[in-house]
Image (cartoon, each protein chain N blue to C red):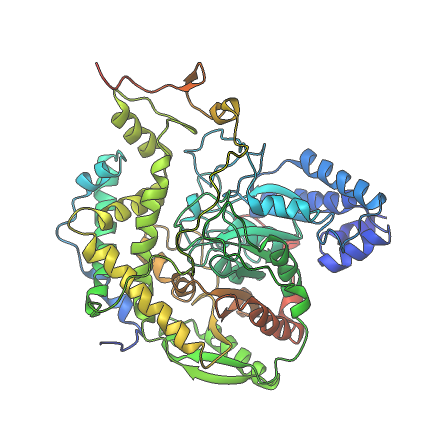
Length: 499
Length: 110
């Protein structure tokens, strides 16, 4: 049945579950279909640093055995579903590089909690999806391995830092993927590639086994081709974990079950501070259409104010780099990873880190060290933490009036590879819409809301939800998605010619 | 408090330069060796970024409490019980240099 096989990698999770339950396809067929798609498109888009096909097919075979023994998707909701994994999450026995050279030939001795949860739910986890080194970047150009390319135009970036995850899901190389979001690293690449990406509330998903970048901001989230699929994966990975002390002891709701139902009467906030001048006109036009569409669906649009928006990027790049400088101190060439020998331990650290880290990671560690250094801590780090209080309070005030806030995800569509590579500050400024969400610890989602004309590139819109308000946020996203055509559009990868 | 929102204000302040940022000194604190080319390039880029983050000084934050993280939890405890962990062999497997179950490092004391 070659024709049906060709379509398996493009199916939604519910469709695949039905095929598996009816024995019309096996988990191995599904995994093989993804591997065949990888063989077709991977040389154009470079989503993966590496993948272990034999291990993935073995996991799929085990899923088939479970299905044959009578296990159903009611017990294991992702049984036989291939899920790609960002190279920042530990999977026992698999490489872990964080897109960096400094980890050398590191093999994870244990699995992250999200991986254990995915396996418990029957998912086939595979691949080391490409990313900006240590999740520091907005384009995936900072990977030490390869630059991922946008499935809609391979001369353009995928966004970042989880660019490999977004490109792989968009190009049908896997059914869903896992990424991490510290300042927009799930939502922004989802927007630029044209898929769905969720940043859950801080504390919602365990970070045990996620290599830390900025511990007060990091959160793991799913990528998928529909809100429903993203909600299903989120339902599996969310929940309390005693091994992550920031994980909140609240049971995870059934997010997929919360999708249906009225959005009539829900209030969506529009912040006047988000009408920035640098906003691309086509993105602005898509946003006003989306707002009108929500009004047609019966939601009420309410103007809100987030007065400290203009300070978010500055506060973020102090808090995030300070925490990164502490977290990345562990990469010293002693216990794991690559080592460059030195005459004494300090010389060894300096040489190992000078050789092993790429430019953006070096810049951020140095900046973080500076803002924490004696005499500067209060002026920068403490002040940024206070501004963070103001930003969080802005959102909590707004959420007294509205159920969610709508924004563009990114001020522009995907830019050209190399366009901002030499200007880190310009790159940081493109994170304007996504960063506050992490500082405030709230949840956010990006979904497709249109395309630019020439060239045709996806535009993403973002919904921000209350702390632990994922259900309402997902319901709003689902209602928009199901009444608009954008999520059904596929990138013309077959016409791809590499530059 | 000045809360006039941005429009394009954030794009105009990027020319300010931090005068007292010593790239050599801070890179050494961070235990990162840099080439002379990197020192020059990163020094310039980081001065621009520090110039930009100075904008936080526009806000009066004297009466504001800092936020370290956004989760409503403090002092999370668990029972002090022995649990399974990595074996010595597993913990050493990724070591760049090891002998007798120990990490090898350059000589520290004469």
